[in-house]
Length: 68
Image 1 (cartoon, rainbow, N blue to C red):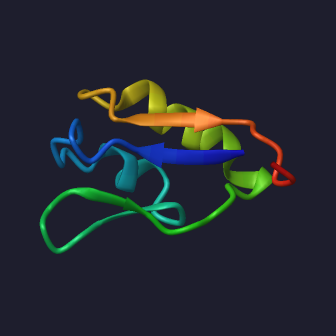
Image 2 (tube, helix red, strand yellow):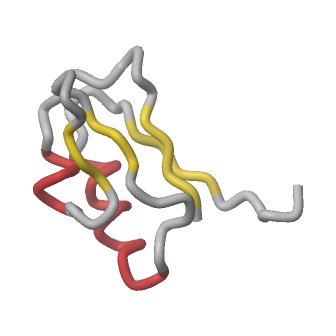
């Protein structure tokens, strides 16, 4: 699973960081960034919760295969 943050939509609430600091962090500009290329299986439920709880709806998930 891949996770994406739309930088045009992110408002820097930081809820995602509170839920899954292994996957998200707040950048120096105050907006969320992603720390991993692929979400580790053991963190998928937390990332889904971060998607659901993002007030600005800036986070999205993709199950796209790595082979293109």
